[in-house]
Length: 57
Image (cartoon, rainbow, N blue to C red):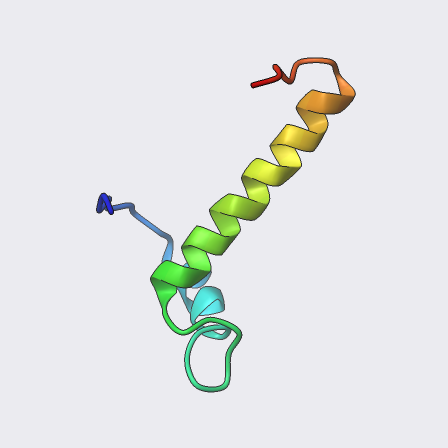
């Protein structure tokens, strides 16, 4: 798996951390970020499909 680094504003990271850990939905920050990226890509695919921009594989 490729590693990347990103700059994240402190307030966004703090909000993210509220959802990570034993009491959160995600085990760690990486899982939370991967889930967010997947969700965003699904949403973008839905938008592209509605506008006829999605190519069939």
